[in-house]
Image (tube, rainbow, N blue to C red; front, side, top):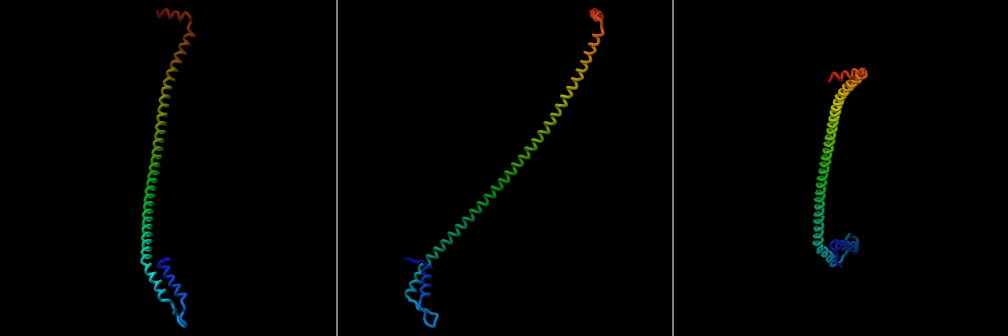
Length: 162
């Protein structure tokens, strides 16, 4: 069974803790060979463990850097998207405003032209009314003459014309 350096050091600590104490002293008795074997094993594993730890730290740093770069890229992309959306929104709003302006202007032009057409038609109808009134007056006078004239007068007028 192989142990890494941390396990070897934990074993050494356990051996020292369980060792028989020397009476009237803080010292203890441990088997020198066993303790040296444990500590040498820890020393042998230490470079590999440190290399592994350094590799893990390097991987961690690389992953953190990749995450940071990815996050910065996402933020930049999101900012571009927001800017594009804002631009599109302002373009759409400008287009709507322009459409409203054009529609308002077209309505005003149509209203002006309608008034002009109505004024022209009213003028033509007034002229026609005057002509029709004169024609009706002429017809009425003609009828009045016809009603007041004798048959002889009409015949004499016809003979006079010949």
